[in-house]
Length: 296
Image (cartoon, rainbow, N blue to C red; front, side, top):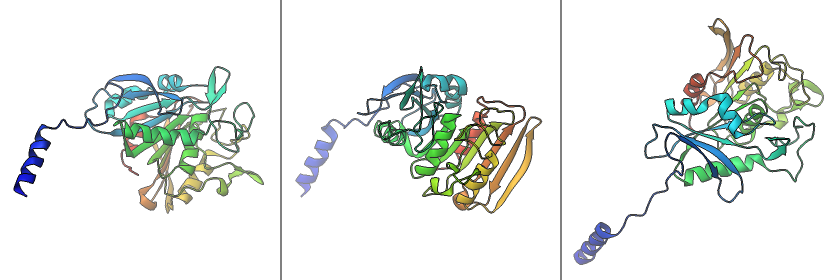
């Protein structure tokens, strides 16, 4: 027995170590990577401060007709990544339109007016595969995966909260918070049957009160209709929140509506920029502070 143990120890000491997976993008850079065998690519930014180990991951989802490069420019999330130490993944949506792409939210018309069909790419499945691939590549921590997005990307972010609450720890839609499709019989209300997350979903949403495309007051396109506050209230109900909405000024041009005392501490917050339009209204530092509180 001693000889066997000694031989095993000698082998362990002399055998080459198996290499751990390594993230394919160098710290402080952004590069386009191909996601497994999906045939689809995305831009991946690794923070300059990155060290060995899997990092938190934030998906940045572009607006309708845009692409991953556009949302990185609009959001300035690469700089936030470097400050706070999280990965940013900026994929292109699965449905081509003109010079860009739109997201596949089942049952909801895109900006072209067309409802995605069975032949269109499944963006939820792709994003789940991207999480798995980034985790297997040594880049991402599965327990700390988050999503944000602008306009159509914000609606897609909301949809991920509805259907992928087992994979995302928190969401932050920007000028795009929804809580399911408008109810067919009363479009001023979200249809509860179209958003049934398995787990409480922490939400921080950003918008401007002068947005004419996705107005916080409701109306607009067919996929919009109900107010942003109705979406917040629905998320608060889904999360079992029992306090709020508390309204408070955060700055002269910014106020918050906040629901608290929620299951799993999954708060629902909305930051509304007075005079803000249909642009990236998010405070990236506030977004990250919110995300950092949650793990799946």
